[in-house]
Length: 117
Image (cartoon, rainbow, N blue to C red):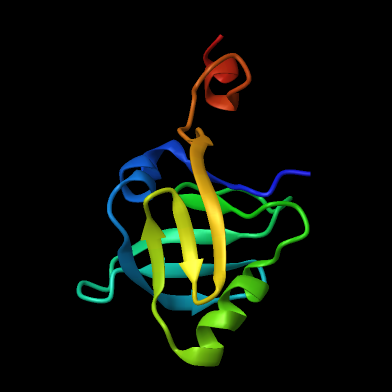
């Protein structure tokens, strides 16, 4: 069982950069969305392991739900931090590695390509 979260490659600068404060912009049954508190720009979708992966997502390790991570944030109202290779919500610290590639690819399996043949 892995204990690290995996992030979209597009988030590598955010994951590897200095810790940055994020706020919870939206929480749904499927995900929590974290935004820049100054601009309100949504930067990260926080997903449970096995969820449908969307661009700019961090997928948590197996057995960890995004609700569990954010519960610590809600308990003491400390900011959510992402950077230096970790997602930190109060006492919950999850290592994050950017390795998922969510870029759309057009190829033989694409219906539009097949229709042109």
